[in-house]
Image (cartoon, rainbow, N blue to C red; front, side):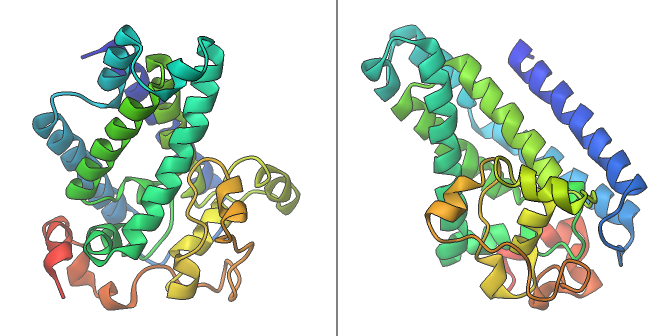
Length: 261
């Protein structure tokens, strides 16, 4: 197992456990469904998704970045020889690309059928960040590999981006209650749980907003930002109307969800 994978995995587990503890001690909303069952199911999705990626792909984004760095391929090495510039610009560009990828999963019907498994979670906590269909996880890896190849992001920059993406996703999907004054400040520079929770509203007019994972500026720049849900965070409903029944939340049925009408 490469050192980069070990570092990323260790950091991911550290943040996951930390956010799980914080949202238990300081919950933002009352949960309405079994937390144990949800965490068990959502954890199974990330395990299956990662297995699919490592079986199907000979490389991951970090491996592509190592090859690009060795041969100086990509746009960023043409612009500047500075590794600091390449890393910062690369992380920003990858974050923007992931923002548009996320919008694509909402806009194209065949991609939405994959992505709706993520939105079908009826509660919202750190484990929701793990709930992606394995095919979506595979497509996202392909997309990021293409972006890394085109940009020529240094391998260290890719490792930092992936670590930040995982940490921010766990944080902004958590049920951790931030004091309002901290939320107002933090959402200027990173996406907070209250910021992203709007995106998981049962109302499609709200779930098609607040697409960012790391940086909040893209939503403001491209007109997809909504500060608060119409019903308030305690009153809003989470999930998808079509998949509220318990039978849709077994891991086998979740894997079949793209083909359920």
